[in-house]
Length: 63
Image 1 (tube, rainbow, N blue to C red):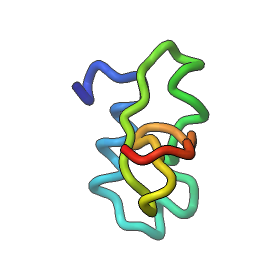
Image 2 (cartoon, one colour):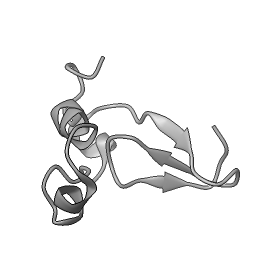
Image 3 (tube, rainbow, N blue to C red):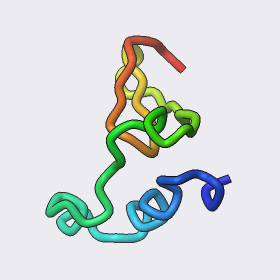
Image 4 (cartoon, rainbow, N blue to C red):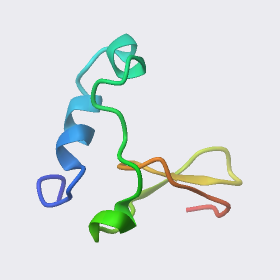
């Protein structure tokens, strides 16, 4: 599934690079999955909000 997502390559790199490189902007998250006609893949942030693995979108729902 990662290969088929437009931001999948960035996600692959984010899982393998050290955090200081990600903080510098290398392999940062995409703007919004909906802009590239892709679906969000949600994770639970704090039991109140959910974030997408691939982009910077945050929603006020628990997934």
